[in-house]
Length: 95
Image (cartoon, rainbow, N blue to C red):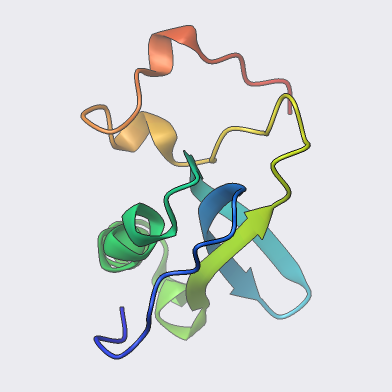
């Protein structure tokens, strides 16, 4: 996280996002109405991705927001790797 970046205060579902060329993923989230929470996890997602995938060092990491009007926001692809943040037992992965 850029220490100078101020968290967004808009309501919404925030995620740690990953971009690899044209491919993108919602890696971790949602952090509902908590952009600061998503920002705080960017480094952890980057470290875990680098441990798992050789090309991950070249990927772009950041955050994104889905509007709060979305009633059932998707779960992050890496939520199960962060059980202290997300109780994955209640998630369904309908990929």
